[in-house]
Length: 534
Image (cartoon, rainbow, N blue to C red; front, side, top):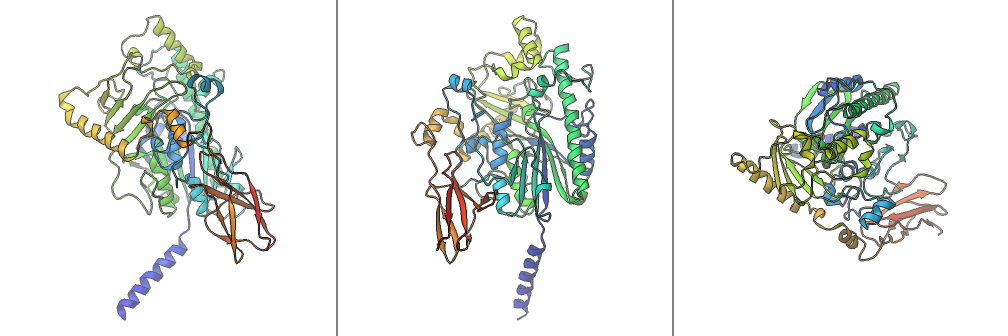
């Protein structure tokens, strides 16, 4: 009898604890194309008082890595919790303009995500969150109707009707993007070109210095934008109880950094401010990959982590028992330029596998030629005026394997792959990368046209998702689509909000709904009006 009573008490306590658990509010403040340009992360030039304050009230994460050195593939990994090479979002990018289509012979398309994969905002909505995105997505696949509550430059947690509803909000700050170096070229600088540090792989001249100073000045503008968001949280009395994440989408939007899978292209600063300022002022050195972000969101919200996700939670209820040992990165098509590089790192040693060693390191990506420092670097190369490490980027071919000690060689100039002293480390990382490619089914080995052919079942365009159907029983509505992996969304008559369909719901006699079925990467079904006409 005593044993039964104890068991009953345990169950009762568990039920009470679950009922009392309040899902936390979570905000992601993300910026574009930025490495370690925060005062509290060691930058002595740029002035970032708001991020410094956030870091002092939160935890600094020093070993966070994107899965690509460019936005869309890395954002695909964030959105799915899967490596972009598994999700089909590895080529930069899937949405091609007319000229890119002409050169590559590829259509503009959406990646067809594996069956069962749901973007993390949709899962959050299914679990009661109000989700907003302001405003960039660039996930390599088309968003579904019910993916966000709001997705616009006006999206905000303040727009939710029920102020007690937990929210997840993203603010994507674009002012640090590569393009803003030339688009803001005429604006006043707040950072002096004389103070910036030029890396040894680029020429040190006034043109390059101006670009670096422009970029750093843009960082200072971004810091003010961060301060404005934090001020709004404080105005609403939400700051103390909200998780605030800050991170960029990959390394600097500057030559020989962006698009690269060296540490400088992948490694980014991250700050997390915890509710009640728990862990304030701490530094966390564990390895974290972008594929870990979505699992960690779910873990903090006590939502079970979907089995399709390839990352692991580093915080919360479902935190992984062991920290990760390696991070991985990939480079594939960039606009119209082809290459394939894979990398693995233990945080210090980085191994790179070049699948096209006959190709040069430098790719003539026309988009970045608008940056004056890039154009000047190319002019100096043609004039024979680059020297030493400034020529490193312009080597005509690559070794099949590269190994770097980023602790002693942070610019990654010295390839240790042929050094007998590092044979054990080379073998370790080589085998780890092979295992990763097999375990997560690297789609980069498949030519892009063949991949589209497989996805589209041999047709010249994507299939159309089968239309939704409604089954009614005792005024309970169930929705179906014959397309495997289709996601269903509906909205009640008179409502503008699409709701994700997860289970049967009550539909009274005379009520009507609009329904859409969407298999991500296929064409969506037509919107169908269905109702209870019994």
